[in-house]
Length: 437
Image 1 (cartoon, helix red, strand yellow):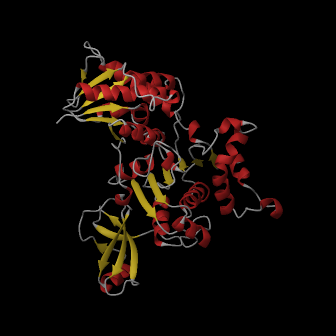
Image 2 (tube, rainbow, N blue to C red):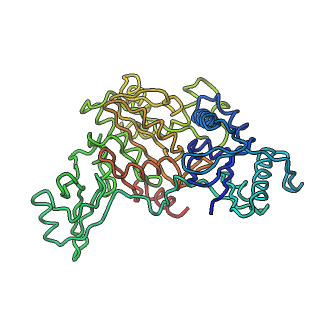
């Protein structure tokens, strides 16, 4: 049975392609949604880009029949633009929710006109879903890109082998791959079935059909040595120049950002593979935005970039540089080795021969991540780090953010690698807090 889907503004701003994501079903866009989108289209940020893309798509679809009477979609469904003169009950129709009220009224009209077909309001606004339910409307989140976090690819597989196989792996440096059904660059924890402590760490090589040893650096990376197997796997990906996209997922304190910046500094300064290390993170304030902060643009950005500064100073052993008379991260910036800036300034650029670290990537939408990764020029490596459980964006959750989307889409790509990191190494207190609170 065909269904009628009514789309909210935030769905289209989250994914401009949502118009085409409902297969052979009917898509209804309330005219009030288009009015809201019109207010965003002049913005120079990602929301503005999405708004303009939605407007172009709707204009292309208008055709000769017009959106009011319905136009055919490539998937076989139909698209309508509708409005409503219905008045909602006074208890529901609060003035501060004027646009939401009109969207709800339109959904009720669609349900009334076509009572045989299921009518579903699709919105990423939790409160609007609750209000719709109170009116007897079915409401759902937009989950086109949803990946259940418990089913997210970890990048690591455990493989039970005999003790002789573990010894053979150490002696000859490889082991035959039992089956070809592995992702490229997937890591393997070889465990002796009889003695679990007798184990080895390796990586899948689909070309050679073998499990091969991971990269181990005698002196670590910029003085940082892996403390657990996931960190060892992460270092292998970060130091492998053939892998151009690395995703590191894990809770606070697992070392994602620290290892990424350390690897970038090593590659840029010791090996000269990259011109510089570019570190960025989305500015998604928990409270008021940047404008209320005093000072220049650089001074306004400083609070948001401070976690990155902390990591760089830790790597340089300069947490108390003023007292010790040591150097600070400012010297690296002045020398052009390190560049730190918000993602707002990344869009539209071409970034060649750089080691780019994007921190807090879980706060990005799939389209924002696409915009960032597509900036990579020749010789650039991009590392996305984040914790899907710590999301500040009100319209995303652990299952549909840009970081999880990239992990899922790039799983089978030869030039990409992923590791989910579980064990916190920041401190005993930080590890307890991440687990208990």
